[in-house]
Length: 604
Image 1 (cartoon, one colour):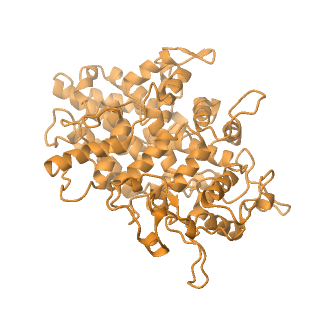
Image 2 (cartoon, one colour; image 1 turned 30 degrees about the horizontal axis):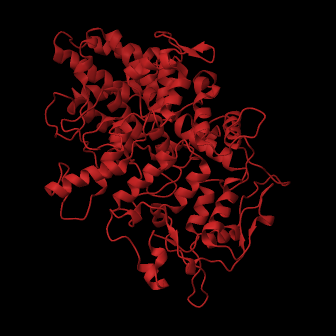
């Protein structure tokens, strides 16, 4: 049977590969509506919106959205008094309590070590991403996780402000990385300036990009400040390499060449600003040798979660520091004068980055790519960047860097809402492997017997795992262009950088296992493994067209091509559907063929 399924999937791929020519962006089969900007929300539009804003919608969420409206849903998701922030650290602490009490937990943690491994952090991440109730976290922390938008934006931010447990200094620091992810979640709708400072001073970033214990220059000992964080904070986290117009296009000089945003002198200036910082508590060290050795005694100590603190004897206060130069820069010539203290100079340096005109279009494009489409139009970038620069649509000056307003602008922009119709051949993005699996689990009410989640190494099956990229450049580059037609058209396709024949097979096999082996009522699953509820839709499968309609809406936002629909129909009606087991198999076949199709692989 599995061979038959894979052969059928293979037959479907050539048709689905031309999905942009055949997909139906407005089938009109679900026309329940609700007010939206004076219009109405069809269920297909609700499904597209939730595919962009969550880890994958369920049918129930899709059908509920039209009554609430896009604005109402965003208001609820962004209000932490209504939708509490889900946090990983309290979940780890709950697992830790099991380890401390029993010596090990159901995931095999060893109680002889002083705390947990990364597998528990991965469990916490999946619990927040999938949502719902967890069996461990106790009040006052939220144990019913409904903040889908916040968690989805935090995941997007984690692919911009990258840290990774692939780094040897973080591989055994689950609390540090959980705390870092929680920091991104807390700031998902906050201000970019605050986020930039919290990223800069988080000890996980301090270890990852070697700002922690960065020493001031000492010619006698041949010491120069480390430039790693100084370089990446500009290139990858804020302004990029070249000056941008507000629509993200390159500014060019009189010879037609791109205008660099910074020089080596700028890198060195920021590197001097980033000296003297280490774990909280180490600022009281008696001398530099003690300061260099000072660190939390175990992974659970607060030093791994609190912002780094400055040790003043190692701050490079004696030198002027060349920072960024741009129109309207507040520092004369972009120079930070000597004689300041570590915190004040850091504030001025981060302000210098924050107010650079590149930040708006840079962050706008990155977030649009992560949530909506790989190739946003210049006008789309400009509209979002304008909101970053000023969140007040009226004549009064508003707030710069309001990420909540930026996310709202991204999701409600006309291009986000109808780009699949306006530009059907270029709009959209390849779904990340993690998002394909999270969508399956959320759409099919996945649950484990114990309430726990056992999936410690998703990169082995999905070629991707949260906070586990192999470099600071993330799993894929924002400007990666698949060789061939994509590249020749001047387009980019970031997620294709981790797609290969091997990874495509691995993802297919991962979905195969979750659909055919790990289902509720099926055999051979541990109590901690998530299993989908395929029997929920068994009665629906008695009507093949109804089943296809349901999954078309849930997984493809009602955009299934006529050719894929016909082939699915012909295959599913060829299967017997009298008994519950026979109808269950129809459900599994439909899920597998849709979730592994090229049409589903591309989020439109």
